[in-house]
Amino acid sequence: MTVGSGRKKRLIIPIETKVREFHGKYLLSLIAAERGFDVILGRQDHLREALQSLGPAIYLDKSISETKIPWFKKFRSLGTAVCAWDEEGLVFFDDETYQKMRFCDEAFDQASLFFAWGDVQSRAMLTKRPEVADKIKVTGNPRFDLLRPEFRSFFDEDVNRIRENFGSIILINTNFSFVNHFQNEDVLRQQLNSYSISSQPGFFEGWTEAQRHAFDAFREMVPLLSERYPDHTILIRPHPSERFDPWNNLAEQYENVVVNADGNVQEWILASKVLVHFNCTTGIEAYFLDVPSIAYPKTPDAAYVQPLPNGLSLQAGAYGDLVRLIDEILTQGSAYPRLRDDSRKSLFAASYMSGMDGRLASERIVDCLLQLDYESVLPQPEPVPQVPLIKQVWRQILKLVRRPDERGQAYLSKKFPGLDRHEMDYNLSRFQQITGRFEGVTIEPVMPQCFRLIAR
Image (tube, rainbow, N blue to C red; front, top):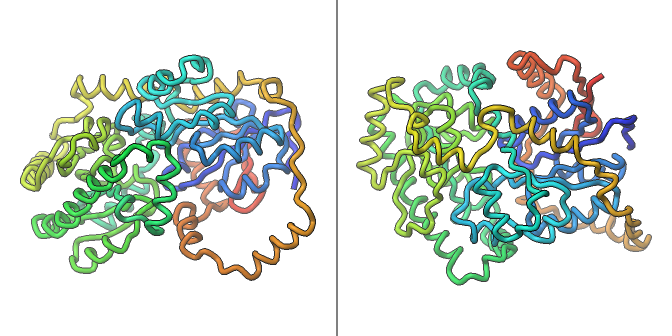
């Protein structure tokens, strides 16, 4: 299937983890369409498979990890430029660890532009590759555009629905994929071994031990909170990479404990009285949404404390500290001091995140994309090697006889449960009401779970 685009530049925006990426990338797509791009937004694996039929374009990826190298080379061989940001590049221990875990030189070199969260991430990259300063643009990330005050009402309908269904919520966000991975330890180990830092003795073992300490503390904490706050819902929201079983087992034992990972986490934070986390990005989101967050517990090894989410949260080293803080927050309600009013926290946050005032991160990214003459910076497309006919036939036979990886398929479905026209239209209406913009943007399906956005 070929989608004609006239003289408009084609921009392809894939989504891998829907609950985390969808709304921010939708806003970015709308702004790009409004400013002249022909945008294709949708499920990542579908867009990759169809890329050859979509013509020359700019493909906006979510990372520059080692696993992206063959994809980026393929995209460029098809005449498609690659730009990227690092979706998980906001929270990291230090510059050296970032370079070893998140920065792959070969993948980065395939990209025309890279959009950094803020000055701290940019510095972590430039200390390794100072010669690439022109390629790195400090813009912020579209996901955090939704945290800004002017978008606060975007989630009002969902927040009201959540409060009606669950009442007063104490939100528990978990982040323990090292010890509670959705698939299995072999898959996790394979993923970890792909990072160059895996050769550093004891690094992942220490990080795993820190997660295990917190994981055990959270499982002990939930029943205690359930008993201490019987008039509140203790709502557990597992990380997308985690198994739900340990948390569902707890929920079955306590009437006011619920497990729910539906929707965007921002609506759940806004519906809650307080958030409890460990090393989790949701502590940062709560900071900007003016919902008190508590980092719990204190890890035995300070080397495995993430500076940003913990630095923008209240600290509870032990269970007694935790309930003291929760009691104060619940008692004072809206009178509890906003963490954003702390000038030291505000300066700390600003060093990590751009785009939280002034122009939106989405606008800044589109500014850069409009200036990118991708047809001139790309090498001449190289022919994609033809797969011999016998190999093509053999692959089709294998598809028919090979038992599907049910757990792997379940994991993909969990990360992207679907996207239909109704959801696209509904969210377009919300963005139009909030911004007063995008009336001229139209949406049409181009393949399953993928949509074209263009201004007529």
